[in-house]
Each structure stands twice: as C-alpha cells, then as structure tokens.
Length: 149
Image (cartoon, rainbow, N blue to C red):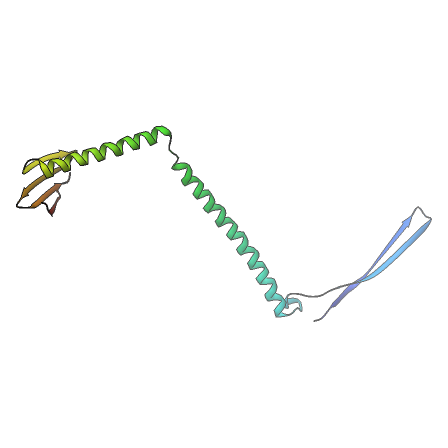
C-alpha cells in the first residue's frame, strides 16, 4: 500500500504580540479506491459496506410498510358491539332456517318446492334417495343426490 504526501501545513498563532507559536505537520493520505491508487480489496470492502447500508435502509422501509399494512387491516376489521350483535343474530337465524329446511326436507312431504330469495329449491324423497335441485338466479341448476334412511 502506498501513502502519498500532499503537502506541509504550517500553523502560526500570535497572541497579543507577546509570543507566537508555530506548528507544522506533513499531510498525507492512503488511497482506498483503485482508481486513486488503492487496492481492489479495499474497493470491494467499500462497495460491500455501501450495499449493506442500502439493503438495511430498504429492509427498514419494507418493514415499516408491512407494519402500516397490518395496522390498516387491523383498523379495517374493527367491529363495534352493534356489528358483533348483528353478526351473531344473523348467524343464529341462518342456523335456524337451515335446520327448518332440513327438517322439512327429511321429515316433511315427499316432494316440494320453495324459494329462498332468488334461489329455488326442489326436493324429492323416493326409495331412500333424496334428490335436491337448486336453481340460482341465472337459471343454472345444481343436482345433489343423497341416500337417506
């Protein structure tokens, strides 16, 4: 490695004409980058340090963005007590309706049709086989056949 001299610096201090002090020193530097006389090894270290600093900054930005995304999602899913009550009542009503329809299909008439909103349901129980035909609002039919006792 080569140390280069770049000059001599002299500093003189005068104090109220009573005395003066002079100091001189030789200025030198050791080149780091190969373009200025340094070694390739040092350049590689400098580049790795810069890359590490850049990667660290990028990782902090990504982590902060993920934290903000989680906070936004958490705030979007905050439910008031009224919201939870409505969800609970809706769930109970859906279960009771489903139980009512299941009881009607399994123990009621051998054949029947009924509508739930825009969806039509036709069922037939015959010889231990339950056939359900579900027709959606677009007229698409779905056939489900189940063995029943």
